[in-house]
Length: 170
Image (tube, rainbow, N blue to C red):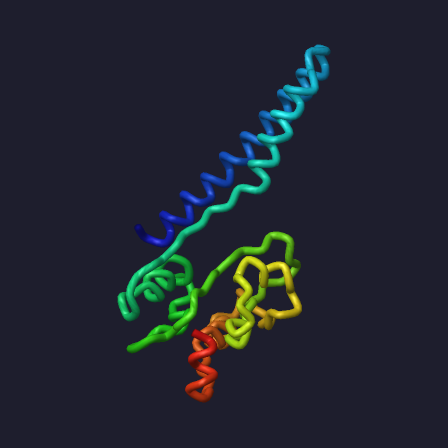
């Protein structure tokens, strides 16, 4: 699927969600205006509206190393920059699970990296998500492809450690 087509389908999906939200809100108003609203119906409407608000799309790219996952992500999401934004090359570019997220609550774009040393703690990724001070934040300027490329290069940084440390990190 070409990037422009994916983008237009995503836009259509977002518009559909907005229309559903608008219609549910109108329906809620109609129920109130006609004195037919009740607690059970209100709870269901609120749940539907909350589901729309919390809705997220998750795409997972899984495969063996050097199979083109990063190239596919670059093509799907960053082709309009005219350069590879995510680091990609021969060999193992990223050895850790990497998540790309859109944070609608943030006022600025950023990359959030969890240092490899956290693997020695034994806590899950889910638990680290609740501890923002454990993460390294890298500012991201979506209007500057060169700066985006530089920021995303942090994902592929190498760290030299002793064999014992490497073993402790898994």
